[in-house]
Length: 220
Length: 220
Image 1 (cartoon, rainbow over the protein chains, first blue to last red):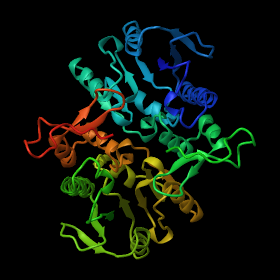
Image 2: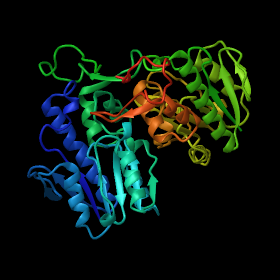
Image 3: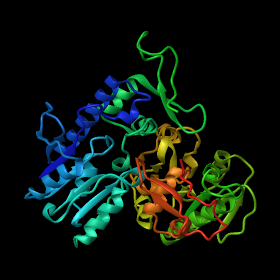
Image 4: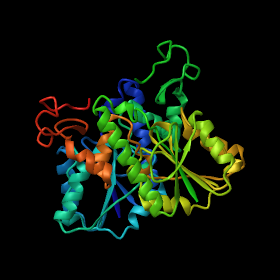
């Protein structure tokens, strides 16, 4: 059974550019991908990376220049067995989460992301379903399942719902992460609990002289 | 078995004041409380409201002028059976979530909130434990459990992790809510999926003339 992971090979995680350099974003995105593909493999799935450009990675690579929805729907329409679609920026997801989704009796299992997004979908009969990301995709996917006569389960997981998109999301990775992406983040970012909402900030004690702007930079 | 719900009776949900009037915030806070206490009762728990001032509500009311931590720790130190502490602003939580927490074999079950917070705790032996909210309380609570020789389980739930604090959080309630708070919100707020991140905005078609500023107001 295959898990498809859309992965942006160029300018990944651009919404983190206020707090991370381009190199840091590239490295973080790659480590999040490694964490997730490791989890998927441990859960027994074959990993397919869906990219917009050729990319060297230990997985089946599908390159498509189409938009995300078209590329994924092409994949679904040619699939002959159940498919999981999983975003590359949810590094808190665990093997248990994936196994629980695989074990659901529903035709489609949908794990919501924050703000109306869809972070993971497990689709038993890919030929009968299509995806529609962007906007409030969670609602769209529930509707598509209903319109297609498929039963849908909403998968209730903090881990799977935590997509790392913006500076504030790094707090979740810093606090709850157990994989390589979190380990990397913690080498140069510290938690700032000084007042109000917890933030991440550069840890001046951990970054070698000359590699940071001289003082800590709060994320907001 | 008791569930303690801290509830702010004055100026509730002040961080929503940019998008909701004082009356709307008061009503929303009350409906979220009703949703949560309904869930707790259905799961077989007795509800205790911890307030800073007398409040008329169908539950045991404990009034304390102490800060949240001291008031809760007073309660724990005099408790003779397991206690659940649950925040009043997590209206997505379900009866199944509460039952799953109650069924955990761990000494302390901790359900994280976003940004390092703690939304629910189920404490088997309250005399051996104390709470420390504010800051990255999730990490503090895990440490307190460890220091006290208690086993801790992290409860992985999107529902329980979704605290409604800021304008952006209303999106979760609008999309995923099944209770009275969500129903109320949807009477006058609509989803705005026009561009970028999904937001909530006043629904000018639903609000009677004269009760809105004449045009829709996005939350950010």
